[in-house]
Image: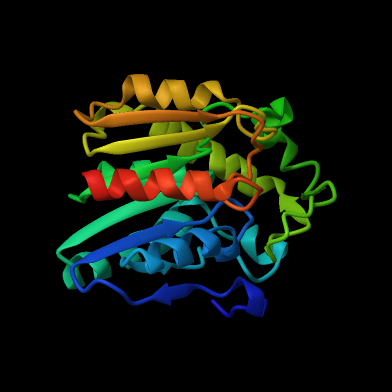
Length: 244
């Protein structure tokens, strides 16, 4: 996959030779959503990796040709390489990346996971009609992006076919949460305009982790990794990873 957007490139920061954190970005987004967190964790000593998921960082038309299996495949390949190189591997996923983190934790032995704004229930009810809508309309234009004082890259329009594939991933994760047994921290903003906040409660209640924590942040949106107050979130993630 040729990356056409330089500001959407994956990143890696080498730190501790024994501990690595795999960061996974969200749907139609890019590693820019995770870079502030990546730099923070690197300063704390972790080695940090954030791949660009298949179909992202190019064009919406190219993303349209990929599915959830391709997106998971990118993250899975990176996870495998990290497990071969590092003694301890942690995963932190944002939005769809949270679902991918949950999915991969069902298959691999890792030290712990963090799920941020992961969707189980979506605010936009039209999303549930995309299996039909994809045959009527190809793309949905996004609303103007808010300014988070962080340079982030994401597509300006969403492939409806890709939303339909995302729903399949969400359904698969939702029905198999009992297979998640690793230590987990679940983070959710209470003013999320993409994911219904009760998604976090559902994940918390259905995973079988012996160590599990949940934190709701007041007056925070979906983009909790880049909006004002993100340092508070980063501190909690670091404290959790250090504790486990």
